[in-house]
Length: 83
Figure 1 (tube, rainbow, N blue to C red):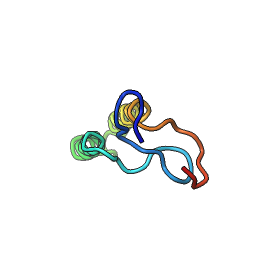
Figure 2 (cartoon, rainbow, N blue to C red; figure 1 turned 60 degrees about the vertical axis):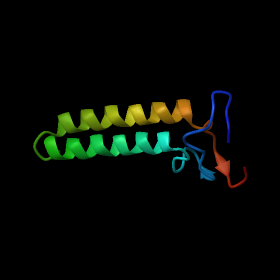
Figure 3 (cartoon, helix red, strand yellow; figure 1 turned 90 degrees about the vertical axis):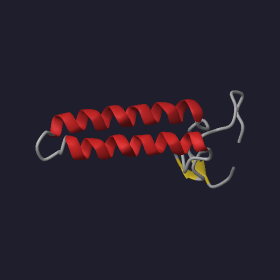
């Protein structure tokens, strides 16, 4: 579970493609920040009133989360249940 750069924040899922639950406090902090941004966007930019602003914030926040997962997570690939 360690990479050359250090401990993996987001381990790979056992089945499928992508990352699972964070494994470190840094990963949890990133995930909570993402949820806070989405929650703030829902509160301050409700999609029923300003859908383009909300969609832009949600897209950028999701892109940032995926970038962090890509850099600090295990390499993504399809997994069938084995490690």
